[in-house]
Length: 304
Ligand code: NAD
Image 1 (tube, rainbow, N blue to C red):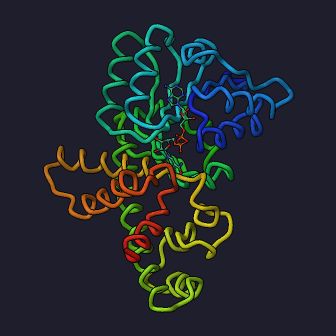
Image 2 (image 1 turned 180 degrees about the vertical axis):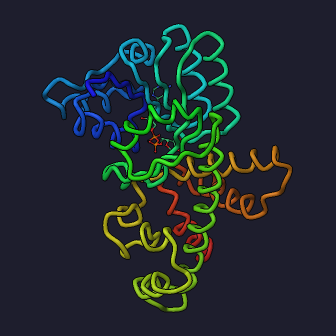
């Protein structure tokens, strides 16, 4: 406590995760995002001055003892850490909570270890924007046990489950991309079935009620239902805005396909859902919509 914690990447997830760090401990927070507005908003929400805006990612690394990154994908993560290498100090704890491929995670870690003695973990999350707001995320953590033990109390401020996935940086990512492969497939499955059911004349709420008390039950149906009007406070009830973008899901399925190549196996279901999310982006301009908008995409296809 009283730690200086840096946070880079205040998007849909980061902007909801970072406040817990100051609201639930006496830490000071140093934040940066390319989008200046998100920085200003967070600083203004904390009138006690414990959240400070920084002028660059490197400024965050200079000011903080612990740095958390929550960036879109591998390219952004690699470029932020690469350009910060000279600012990183021995003894710092670095936590990358973005979802990226295990290979990039390992490479970034090795690059920093060449010149510094630091603790690093990868700690991708599951639980969506709701989990980020409510501090109920699951963190999947990879890295040395000592680094994990240092990161654990900080991650617990933002999540309910902090799970140690293995001793290598990147092990959290391996677990995360397997989880998201399940999610992309289950969301597509629930969406396809709900479009079928409603075209057969059934009320979507009835479909969901039955799935959720039967063998079709899953997170995509009972916590994040893709059909508008079935649940409040989920992206499907606000025109698929403000959740987990279809483009990010496409990225994650791509990471799974890439990982499957290195594990020498095919990913037939992964390839299929990757096609859905690619068409959502390229043919329907829905890449920035929430990934549960795959239901809307199935509907459009059924109607044409
Ligand atoms: P987002 O696109 O909403 O936010 C990313 C933020 O990073 C943006 O504010 C962007 O301005 C900022 N950014 C990009 N490049 C930057 C750079 N070089 N320096 C500083 N800031 C930079 O994404 P998100 O939904 O918050 O997701 C973040 C990560 O978490 C992704 O890897 C995603 O796959 C993962 N994730 C998201 C969810 C979800 O439900 N949204 C759930 C689990 C995991």
